[in-house]
Structure formats: C-alpha cells, structure tokens
Image (cartoon, rainbow, N blue to C red; front, side):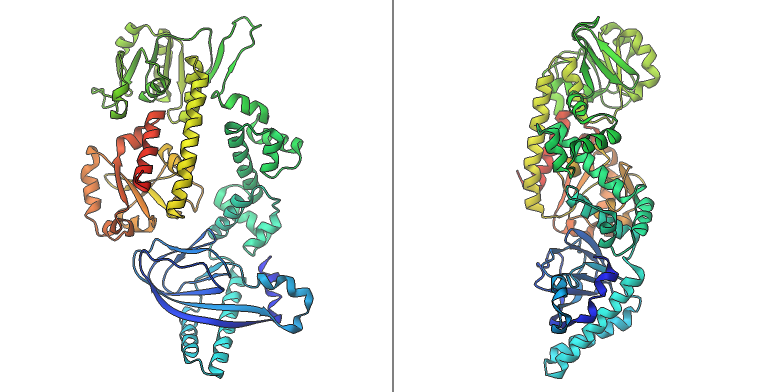
Length: 567
C-alpha cells in the first residue's frame, strides 16, 4: 500500500503504548520476534538491524520501525548499543466503520528507517516518554500515549517528505521482495508502493542503481531460475514456466528465447554438454562432435588420445574423469613448475610443459599431441599451437562445470561428467541447508590482504561464487547493496570494520605473509567481533584463488563445511 494511501487511515486510529524499555545490547546477543509494533531509538553504538530480511544500519540517533510479528535480528555489533524501544499498538476507533476493518492489521506494519532531521528534539521527546511511562500514574500514561502520537506524526511526516533514506535502500527492499516473490504476479505500481514512491521514481532509482528497470529485474530473476531448472532438473517446460510465474507456455518460451537467444528445450539439450553437440550420422563426418570455443568451432572426428593442457585446471578436469593428460603445465613462476598439493596423489606419467605463464614449446612439439587445450592467456600463441595440433581456446575464468561437460565429450565420458556434476549439486544443496540452519543469516566474507589494500571477494569471483551461489551463504551487505561485477573490492584497513561480517575466511600464503601479520596486529582487525569470537578461518590462498577445476572447487567446499560446521 503506498504511504500516502496508508496515512489516510490515521484520522481514524488511536495508538497505545504497551511498554518502554531502555537497554544495552552487547555483541553476541540478539533481539527476539516482535510481540507488537516497535520503534527503536539508538543512543550510541553501531551495528545492523535485520527486519524481515532487509538490513538497516544502526548509528547514534537513528530510528528504525518494525511491525508486529516481524522477524528481526541484530548483526555486526562491534560495541555495545544503547537504545530505547517502544512497543505500541495501533487500533481503529469504533467510529471508523466496518469498511476500514480490513486494513486494521496493516496499520503501521511497514518497516522503515530514518535519520531524524530534528534528532535532538525528537530524542528529548523519547526521554520524556520514558519518564512518563515509568511513572505509571493515571494521566501520565495518557501523556505517554499523546507523546507517542506526536513522535509518530513527526517520523511519518519526514518519511512522507523524503521517502526512504537513500535510493539504494529502496532498491534493495524491492529487489529482496522480487527475489522472494518472483513466481507471483508482480506489477510496477505495487513494487513502487512497497517503498512509498511513484512508479516513475522507482524506475529512475533502479536505472541509476542497477542499469535496468524493476520489471527487467523481475525477468532477469525469473530467467535465471528457469535456466537453473532446465540444467539441473527433469521438470517439463510447462512445469518450469508455472514455477517461475508464467501461466502461458508460449509466452514463457518467447520470453526465454528473447532473453537467452535460444528456446528452452534447446537450452536444456546443449547446456549439460557445455555447448557441445553431436552431428547427425548422415553428415560427412560420422559421430563427430563440434565444440564451440573462443576461436570458433572445432570438429573432432575421433576421440583424442594425447591431450596437452596448458592450464592446471584442465589437468584437474581430466584427473576427475580418471584420465591422464599426455602433457600438462604446472603452476609457479616463469621458471619453476609444480602442481597443487590437492592433485599430488593423482599425478601419473606425463610430460611437463613448463608453466602457464611460460610454455615449453620445444617439449610441446616433441610430445606430438592430437589435441591442445589452452586459455585466453595463450591467445598470441594460438596460431603456433594450431601448427602442432587442433587447439581449443577457452576463457580462463569459464565455469568449471561447463568445461567438465566439454571434457566429458572429448574423452567419451559424457555420462561420467554428468554424474560428477549431479554429485556436486547434491553435495552443495545438502550443505547449503545445513549451513542455513547453523548460521541463521550470519554473513560470511572472503578477504585477502595485499601490499596496499585488502581484497574483499564478491560473488563474481569463482571462489566467491562457490560460497555465495553454490552454498548460498549470506554475503556481507557491504558487497550486495549495488550491482557487483568486479571479482573483488579493494578496501583499506580503516574500512574493514564496515564489512560487518560474522565470519571471515582469511586467504594467506607465504608471498603475502607479512601483509597478513600486519593486518592482524592492527587495531581495526582486533576490534572485529568475528576476531573476538574466533570466527576467522585461515585458508591457503593458492588453493582458494587458483582452483578452477573440480578437485580444487570440492576442496574449498569441504574446507567451508569443516570451518563453519565442524564436519
């Protein structure tokens, strides 16, 4: 309901104070589900208040409101928060008439946050209300109710004039509503009503914050869910359409093709094989496979027997399928070649071809491979590599699942690749449920100290995607309030407390050991609630940053489970 329409009912209601408390919330403690409407006035301290899934920052003199039965929790408390909370009830007066009875339950149920424009005078009123309520003598309780009425008037007047504190807050609220209700009918005017603005204003805010409109975001969310269902379930196209909010199969198919450029049934057929498809037997090359890569298409008439891989991730793909490369590069500097410890027990007899940064072209020529697989790092070498053997060139950051599907076709083990992918989905889905039960909304951050800054990794990074997409761990609000395309934010040590995570995975190795120690000696680091609660987990940066293949990714999943679940 739009705010203006909501306020039109206030001429026919009365408010009644139920309780007033001044309390101190310590780090590690929590608020409970609300028995009635609540006004929260902060006197000191900093943190975040989560109301029905929306995060509101807490700072001195801030005001937050939540309706009856709202689910709330306090997060990221780095110091005690002193606050006053007023529980109250809003009721229709008997003279209002039966036609308004249906809206009684909705009276002031809306969550909102305000930094009062008259903060000192407003908080003086709060102190006076506390005093009157504490006296509990006849007309003083009446005065407390009158003061509450005045407080609500000032807050609602400011909210009506200013709307939500910032466009990003309004956009975040609408996005979370869409994420939770994408399978239901959604209209622009209704979405605008959630944040008490016009449809045109919401459109402008979305375009400014996300570079797309709110209804375009609805389509994006629905199409993303549709793609996941097509990849990972056997549901019919009709069932998928209905599950994401489309009642018309034809309209869904048209919308899907407009978004992805391919019909849903074709998307399902090609995606499991990583954009690999078989040619018809009647064509000139019987039973050949055509593989799409950055340089076009490569037809394989027969399965290659001697595969040379110029990135360790591809060796991992082959090992996972119980195959050995004929030759592989290692990791390390330009001159030193070695292999990650998590692959050591899988190494067999093959030719070492230098490192990813410096290919041993002489060893590669002597190997006489019948297929070479490389990344965009080797683009300038591509013409030369093609002289040695047919060559596939992929983006180095391509999703490992897609690459595994391609190697499944290359090695004739497509079904094995699909089995491995299914096992990973089942594993992460099970762990996701366990982690959700254990953490209950607590935020998890991935940080990596460098020479001049700290890298805070996002869901756009492949390791971030494992935590935030595959395991669905809550990312810090610091990296979710805006559209994130970079793989990491670079923040200063002074900005670190603002991340407000409950758990940190600290990426460390010998190369940046001094930077890690320097951060750990800092006042900012030691002020973190997660540090005090021993919720920091040091992990190997080489594995967490350099893992592109199935074995490395599964190791990260296992380390997350061990750290957060102790399992």
